[in-house]
Length: 528
Image (tube, rainbow, N blue to C red; front, side):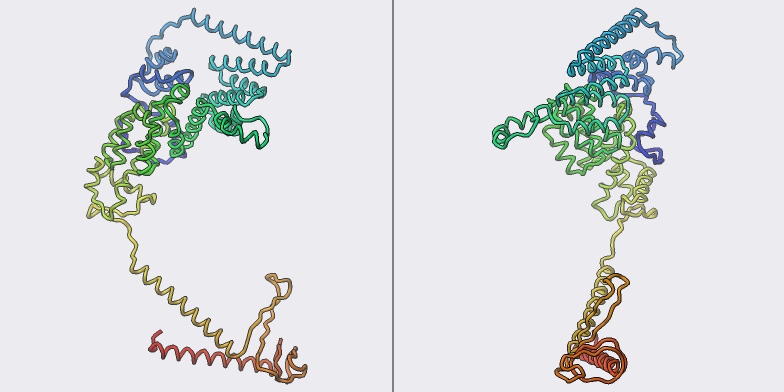
């Protein structure tokens, strides 16, 4: 088998799970003992995992299919003589299942005839559990849905919803799993108060209701596990690790074995943390966690891998991951994501190695990772192209150089931009001073509703003191042309003497601005 510490393929598929379905990996030499491994599971997931191992691992296929009661399928696939099935046992099991199904159907009809709601719910629940034991998950889903319709208490609703989630998970319908998880989140806990209470009674019973309103530990643990598997399906690895870190070994071990084992929880958290967590979080949340320490004790090699990554011993970390790669490829939930997870771990290791340096020697880096030069250059090239590594490869000197910003050029550009802004502000201030000195104020009025198409008029107001115009003191002149008084007033429109007066005022302001500019240049030595 190829070295799993380096990806041979560079194809980018939409999801790791789809790539794994299209190209299933055949594992030749797992390191675990099948009996010890499968003893950590119970129920239907045990059969599902045995069938998965039998389809992926030729060396364990016979034992796995024998344990999963599918021995003849494995023998036929290898052109070996089949084992005669125990017909007596098969007929007895089928007869028992048929009799139990007929009996449960008859009881359900009786409950419906009596119209007892809780009895109908129990009848549907018993029939759903019967279909579940027989492996008929589709009919089990239908019966669990009917049972939930007749549920009258939050406890019963939670119970049926959890069973539905388990059935949908075995059917690989993750969208339905997420929908029922959302429903489970909004379902009130079994101990929650049924209706509004007075403020006095609510205050008196707050301490008692605080514990009663929480979900039971088995339900809370299963909810976290189900949500983590959905997030794993969506490649949300950081959320998987952070959710599973909430579990405690004492309250989890006996309740989640029908879905995952406690060893699986340690592996999921370790791999997802390596792929997504910053180094301080790996130390603080995983290695030094008192609640998660029990899970890591079940998988000592995962603790060593996390510790090696945290202490920048990347060759040791990648070697440990490669040694246990075959075991992870036989996990029904982890197998589709292992290639993607290992690629993310390698990329983060390369980025963290280069982060403190501006120049990196490729030969020394290859020794630190225990890689060939070609493998290292290929990894670095991919990170540079993706924009994850801000460095350049000097192929002649065999070094990596970090792309640095020229601070001197940036400082000069900043100074020039600041100078342009100051010069513009100075011109604006001088114009305002000249207008104030000339006694001219410009008013902008808007007509036509204030919209973009409105009409604008500009009024120029002069302050010269008390003249006597044709309209008296403070009078107003409108229209164009003609003479007029010299009184203080407001002038609009215009041609004739008013227009000439306006031109004269603007010329005066321009000359005053030029004079002030010359004075400022002389004061500053002629170099602004």
